[in-house]
Image (cartoon, rainbow, N blue to C red):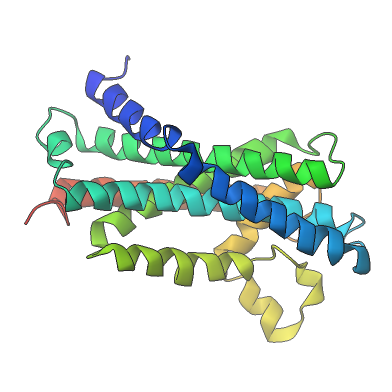
Length: 255
């Protein structure tokens, strides 16, 4: 079955929106992660022993890729939805013959694509600092990156619908998303924790995302990747269903 004209047009518009602004889309994560790899990987990494049999700079590479990927997927979807509401041009899509699920797919796919591109960019930057010749488990690397960017793009749609001003978008990204990532095993292994701290870490979904991508790239993980992939995939489907339901209700889209 061929894709509808509306779905293709909206998806193309959303992709071009961030592609045409590379200085806003690609340059900030490039500069930020050069600093991350320089400070945490090269300077501090030389003083930290190997983790799981791999150099510290290689250990943090997948986590930083996840941080950039999910942050950008969430930010793109939430900003696009909110900006469309703020300037009322989202009504063009709402009054078109497109189905609600098509609108959600367009926003999610374009945002997930941005997340994937940023994740790959960060991985390439990391490879310049440490020799990562091949992916340990390519299927898991691709699958986890695709699932987590889709998941956070879907969360971004919800964020864009519930936000009442631009400050709310900042709060969602900086004070909820990023802390979860930083306490999700980006810079440390769960083996470094014990007791309550280790138990609480398993309640953080970022732990499963970071370790899933880490397993795919360097073959090291603190969790069982198959179970994590199934759970995250199911969660993604559930959040997408919520997105479609909110669009159908017109939540945040109509006065």
